Image 1 (cartoon, rainbow, N blue to C red):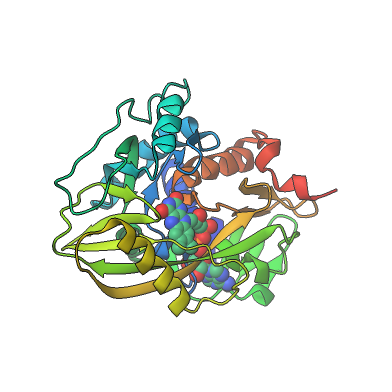
Image 2: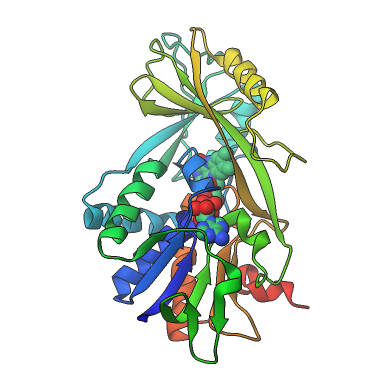
Length: 348
Ligand SMILES: Cc1cc2nc3c(=O)[nH]c(=O)nc-3n(C[C@H](O)[C@H](O)[C@H](O)COP(=O)(O)OP(=O)(O)OC[C@H]3O[C@@H](n4cnc5c(N)ncnc54)[C@H](O)[C@@H]3O)c2cc1C
């Protein structure tokens, strides 16, 4: 029997953040993950503190961002990897009215560090910006595939990562011990993203999977180093490749890539690109959203050793590091979790 402090089920950005925290704290743990339906793997990788539709700050953006960036940098060092870069997001305007809304927003205290107070315009680019664009500062781009690959490899080498499907029927729950196969743990944390709906221990149906699709294009003429936000995000991936997305496919509960998603993205792109491009890949994933748009963190009232971290929605990369800290502060130091994100809010 291998004794550990924690078993973590799922290794998307939630499992990554929990693992990073546990390494930092010196707790031992084993991750069980089967990367079938990983939103993190599909994600565009943009860490964006601003809501780019209405020009408002994302919930708790400053606190999440100031925790997340040193967390990722420290993880890069620990793994001898390179997966995060600071990047500007260029928000392309579609009218003079939008320009004005941007300028008003950039004057607000909570947004002034993020939004440029200047409107830019550049007619030498291969993307259309007839009404100019604003810049979001302090945004980041994470190569999520690289992060997952390097971290899983590191944990595998120290025998803390198992690539297998977690079978809920095999879990044995004692008063002070959780057993799973040859593992004996103090606690278990479920972090399975939208797949948590198949977890018989998850006590609510509050997680709503929202499908999104991306295409990857090859566009050698598009000299773009920043992230572009027009009808969709256009995200530079290197080697003249760009990820374009993501759609919101309401009511589609399959993970199939679709012609509809692809043509929506191609049409959106044609509105802002002057140059030819070729679609070379297409992916789909489920965002684990929640009706009140807040993550879900906490444990079961009837078994305090069973924890959940979920509901990271559309901004998992921004929020996950601090949310994981909140979970472990509670689990190890009994520091209460904020009501707004506490799993308890669904027990009434
Ligand atoms: C198309 C799309 C684009 C997005 N773009 C961005 C973006 O640019 N920026 C951003 O911040 N967020 C983005 N998001 C949201 C972000 O991806 C999610 O908030 C985040 O990835 C959720 O992380 P998670 O760890 O909770 O779940 P996931 O990443 O889904 O990870 C869950 C893991 O658990 C595994 N698992 C599940 N059940 C089991 C089981 N029984 N046994 C073993 N393993 C299991 C899964 O296979 C997976 O590996 C995007 C999402 C989508 C779908």
